[in-house]
Length: 121
Image (cartoon, rainbow, N blue to C red; front, side):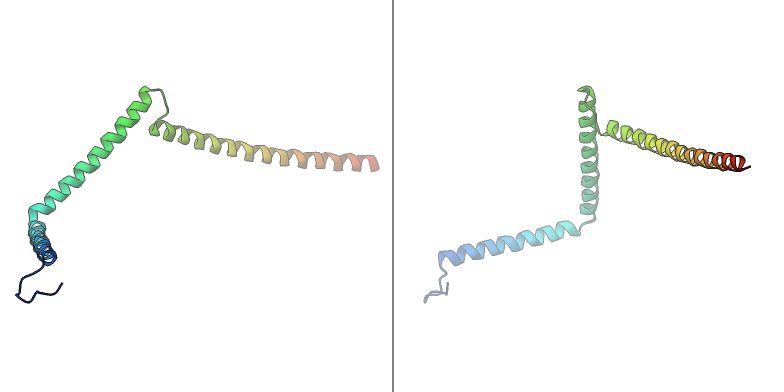
């Protein structure tokens, strides 16, 4: 709103001015706080504590699942590794079976060829 004829501000303008001043003062205070080296250290310690609390929470949940006899994250990872090892072994066995199948087929073909030659002779 525009200034009144006697130079007084409306209540809305007064409230807006008070809020702008408060915001400006808060911004200056926060800038001064962030400028100090102790703020960086405090921020680093807070990040470390947050990471530690997160790890404690996940470990507690795993322990809870283990005590409830339900597979936890570590159990699932261990079983996954075992499954991959078994799949790799099975793949090797399959390759060996296919190689033996090819070898038997070649031997059959060779035996058939010999029998045909012997039959012709």
